[in-house]
Amino acid sequence: MPVAERVVTIRRARVGAAFLGILLIAVNLRVAFVIVGPVLSDIGAEFAWSGSTAGLLTGLPLISFAVFSPVAPALARRMGLDRALGVSLLLLSVGIIGRSIGLEAAVWTGTVLIGTGIAFLNVLLPSLVKRDVPARVSQVTGIYTAVQGAVAASGAAVVVPIAQASTCGWRLALGIWAGLALIALTILLPKLLSPNPIAAKVEGQTIELRSPWRSALGWQVTLFMGLQSLAYYVMVAWLPSIEHELGIPAATSGLHTSVFLLVGVLASLAAGTLLHHTSDQRPIAFGSSILAFCAYAGLSLAPQLTLLWVVVGALGCGSLIVIALSLFSLRTRNHEQAASLSGMAQSLGYAIAAAGPVAFGALHDLTGSWTFPLTATAVLMVVLCVMAVLSGRNRVIR
Image 1 (tube, rainbow, N blue to C red):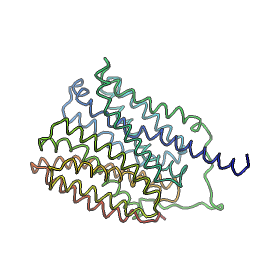
Image 2 (spheres, one colour; image 1 turned 120 degrees about the vertical axis):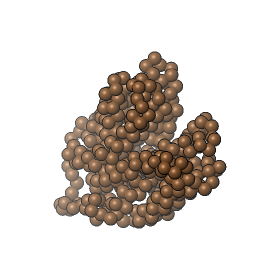
Image 3 (cartoon, rainbow, N blue to C red; image 1 turned 90 degrees about the horizontal axis):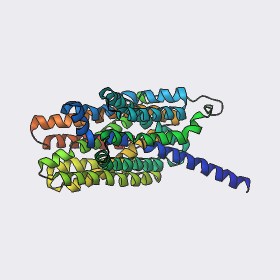
């Protein structure tokens, strides 16, 4: 085989291996978080929890995301990116197992470990994409976002049947998902045990990278991340309640939630492909933000067309998350700066996301209607449109 052809083959094999590693990590990013909801009543009944205590269990991972995301870049700098990812997968698997052993203290401790592990993975995975497949950032981000969404939707669909079919109930239904993290950890182990690569130098000079915390562009990306997360989590949290008040049967509402997740997966794939073929992210970012605005404005003004707004919202939210994750790489100069921006944006972004559903519910309690909170969220989507235009410009933090 000619030398040039051999080099191309080796390069493709490395890219393929990197892509496989990214997908193995991605399947763990959401499923351990979303599968709790369907069996939450069983967990709460076993420990005699109040509704607010049970609700705290579902909100705890989001709190962990906000608290621990800024730690991830420092962990990667100290240990190396690959080893930091390995530690994150280990934390996640230990947390899933701990949450499933049936002791109340272990449920809380395991949930915190799960949130910490996913927070680290969320921050570091865009950095890994930036390092290993820099020419296909948006496309790979779209694919791995779709994969994590599909796995999460599958997990939410099967967790109750598994719990009902086993004498171990919710413990087994939640615990088996540690296998995904352990499989990823095992397959990636040879790479994790290899020596850390020497930091690259450019013409013998050290490049001084500006912190995203001191950059207007960094804050624009952060606000974009936070507001698009709010759009997603408010919809997921409150859509069933909104539809219940409209007289929509629970089974139909559940179907609408499934439609929201499925269409979101397809939108993620489409967004990644579109972003890969453009250097200016403003059109797709602005268009997706408009869809999110239309979804909330539509639910407020024409709630009888709920399914239409669910589909419109899914198209917007499914695209927006891919855009937000891609911006961590596209707005930075190397994978270390990408990790810093990812840590900043996800820490503050998930704080906004965690507060969103709470504030939405409080506005409903205050007014006795869904119209005002839906309208207020639509106004926030206008701000999201502005952030889409600002953060979507083809520039990097300098």
